Amino acid sequence: MSKIIEGLFYSESHEYVRVEGDFGYVGITDHAQHELGNVVYVDMPEVDDEVVAGEEFGAVESTKAASDLFSPVSGTVVEVNEALEDEPGLINKDAFENWIMKVELSDKGELDNLMDANGYKAMIGE
Amino acid sequence: MKYLSLPDLKTRILPFYLAMEEYAARIMGEEDIFFMWQVEPTVIFGRNQLIANEVNLEYCREHGIQYYRRKSGGGCVFADMSNIMFSYITRSDNVELTYTRYTTAVVSMLRALGLDASSTGRNDILIGDQKVSGNAFYHLPGRSIVHGTMLYDTDMTHIVHAITPSQSKLSSKGVKSVASRITTIRQHSDISLEDFKAHVRHTLCDGEIMLGERDVVAVEQIMQSYLTEEFILGNNPRCNLVKHARIEGVGELEVSLELNRNTVTGLNVAGDYFLLGDLDGGLIDRLKGVAFTRAGLTQALEGVDLSQIIMNLSTNQFINFLTD
Image (cartoon, rainbow over all chains, first blue to last red; front, side):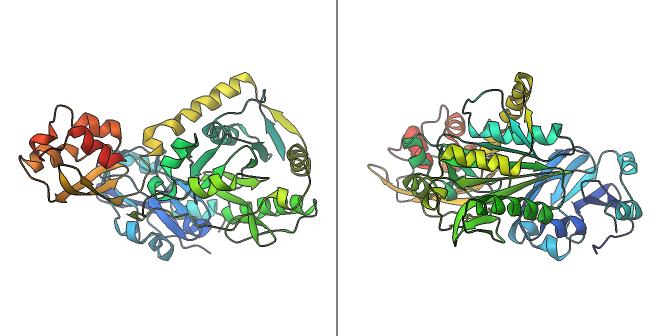
């Protein structure tokens, strides 16, 4: 059974956002990392890139598959998790601790379109 | 599973078929889709691979071998007309289950021909203990695309040369290919290529969906995204590259480059050349942030006479030195 954390926002394509003030930390859920298996590469955006809710912002590649990443929120990338460059497998160790990008949110209203922990739990059938 | 066919029998470039998979994933109903295709000699590298570490570009250019990037993960493969590419598109979202279902179907199709086929944990299909098919996976929300090679026969010389890089490996965090011992259907069976294809189709599919001219136009539109420099080169992972040469009349020249997505992010020039001008302002600063292609470098150094900075080194010579 995958880990789901209360207080985060979840997308249908298995990304999460942890909101802190005007910023959101975006990563893939524990369920998603479990499905993908051993992560070998994370294709991350660049700092200052603009991301748009629902649009692709990178990819995660595992020994099994490459999977597109879709941003759950819109805004400007202010930081990427550089630790994932050297050790992409950190996502498998703890997907919620090892976020992929930090976004300055341009529209916090978009968070209403995402699921809460219970909604996500129901979606993945756990 | 339905077989997806084209309204004509033309052989197209590889990205067309990758785009056709994406198109199929968009239009498909509940039923799984499968199709086969063949291409003129082409190298296909994985989504997050560093081209210079996987492909011998010089050999490819000399022998008219095309090269493209795909959106699925994994390593570099070579394909020609005697290799049959399989594409499988499904709504199934679960990577493990999808793979297992697909490889099980392919293995039993091969076994029906009397071949000793099996699948491995690494997405390969073997005959005996040698690889006959390598597969890669592209996962989209609610859709999965699995595609792979099926070596009916092949030009081993091209395989060996085209996907072995000429230069020593660059340091990079990108995804590396895994070399395998390969075999072909031809080495184990007398079946003709056309009969083999017919067998595959009839074993795996129970119906057909035919694309129309309008679909082909839509596929060609998707294909454009695979042809851009931004996709082919821009997905190159971060890497460090060192170029070294002794240039007549100039001396030893060693340039260390740091590239990210094929853009120059760092540059260091060393050697025993005779410095005449401002290396930082005149050369290094100009190249930072520039696309590491002949066109990008040429544009960045337009109007610069490098021999005013490094004695006897022409701008053209320097660009050749970096891009050869």
